[in-house]
Image (cartoon, rainbow, N blue to C red):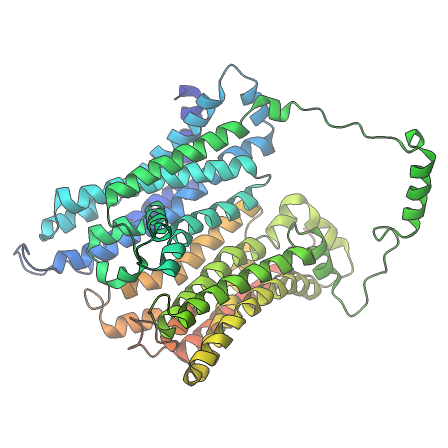
Length: 551
């Protein structure tokens, strides 16, 4: 299964990349800072109390978030990059088998993920030295869970990469698939509840695909998520990760077939070879063909925005309507759970789940749309055409931004029925819902502005997309890691100041989600979000003006 040539080429290529070094340094710094903040000032070991465990818990979740953020970026471009370069067909027609090619790529990316995880070993050793944390019962199982996550995410990334046609779309769908595995696999158990039925058993075992149950067992945080019905067994997650990785491997090997790329293209049928009736209908169709007889773009509509909607893969109206319908169904499903009493969580907890679902959806779709606004044009050569048009830089950048704003606005509006049902169930939360909607609007603005300004600094769409995901996850999820370590080592004031940087946390605080009731984040979080967005838009305007100048 392991071929030395493919393995060495892939591993050396990844190790020489700058982002690999940055990933290792970031993981080491994150783990070191979390331990340093709680390191005891005296020389006594803590063998009984929970001091070390209160450091180990945020460290474990931070390392899992780092694996989820850093590892998928490497395999997501492993196969699609070969296809774009034209070397995949050469590999498939070489003496190497598909298993050897896939094994070399899988193991090289897994070794790279293990190197990133190994950067946290000094921090884990420090937790063990503090006392109160077991080596065999917590630290070693955590390392097995992190390695299993790396293998699972690598297999998913390679499968998505084999099906994708561009690097940026592969990154987008890889992160979406991993988010679905980690979070959406918990949804059936949350909806059905802990009842005695075969549906509940299937939904509960489905949660084994998510590493959250294993992390909850190892960190001793069962009380915080006891309603989700997770299988608290890290060994069950290891088995589920191996099975899901094997399934993804089989699906990827089916795609790595030489016959898949040796199929000749259809030569088509010439017009004079068609029948008389067919030729007559073709002439009639030409007179009313919307692609040849369509009206021009009105002067009041930005032509760049129209171009974005017509050329984007999912920019057509029917895809947008499907997305809106899916968001509405998920939103109403969560509120129906609260209304029917299937799960007695209360409106506040259901509203918190709805906010998290919206933020996750915006975080998946926002960078994939906005991070390629300028980078894709520069990569494909379309920016040179835009520079030669009589349009001003403001018209170009506003048209591109509005194409993303309208799409994100539709996604945001699609979840409003859920809030309306909650207001009907409990009318007293109407002012809170209004402030939550304002916070979510600001989340959308921050995601679009940060992703768009990152797009101006890259000439490669895949790199711009990966950078946008990294920055936004560090902002939106990193502050929640600080909240997870509230009390020890972080105090109330420090946690509140960190959460003020996150408008999503402001939405959770306004809806009184359990754990966020004591924080007052508005309106300071709104002003910070507006300031960050305005700063990014100023840089975006300056960079766009600079890129439109003659070389």
